[in-house]
Image (cartoon, rainbow, N blue to C red; front, side):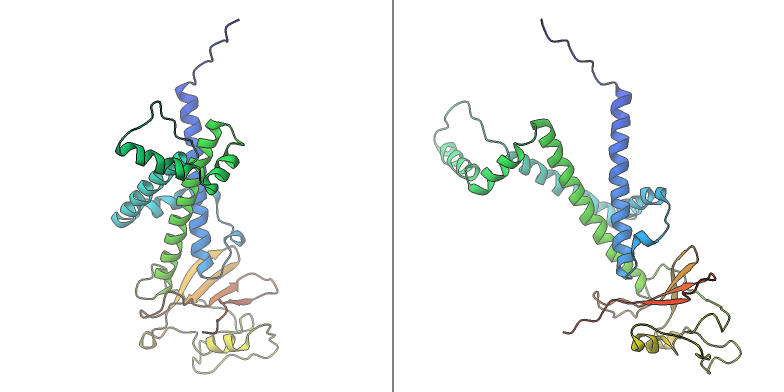
Length: 277
């Protein structure tokens, strides 16, 4: 009996499959971007109650934000395509119908020597565990995910540093007003010079980090000190003092996480640990 011909995949099913894969790539890119962005401020993206659909919109900013980002995305796409073709060529043994002669013979010997090298033989043995169609798709998807990860991580870190510097920040300036018995940091509105009473307060962690902020809670443009809002999430408000223009890329501002609810924790100071040179 002759094998029954398989029904061709309908265009609608193929389009639905493409949309599903495209949505996965969008979500992956958006998650990595926000992971890198908030990680710059020592804030885990998993602690934020961000809506799922927002991760699908972030890649539009990452890839199509401006002409420079579009050019970078096209460059990454071209490099990724070349790497995919190279990887597919490396895991396949070249097949020639006729024995080449002349200059082609030396090229064939070189290619044959490369393919018979131990790393490539090991790579082919590992990839041969999968069927050929699945192996090709696995290589393609792996390179696409790697490219999207690098692109999103780079843009996330770069945008976070841009927002951390006062002169380039796109984050709004913020003013937080709180009852004096609810917040140990801050200034009294009736007397900005006098520190609020710290009677009854408790502290855990780095006292120097607390003292470095206390007394500097208000904006002072002459000293390049402007407080900005990073994000408001639930009962938490995240604030940071923007850094001056000459800040080095490896420097990070401290992040204040203020609880505006009635919980016990009223204030946290998140800061990247200092490393000895």
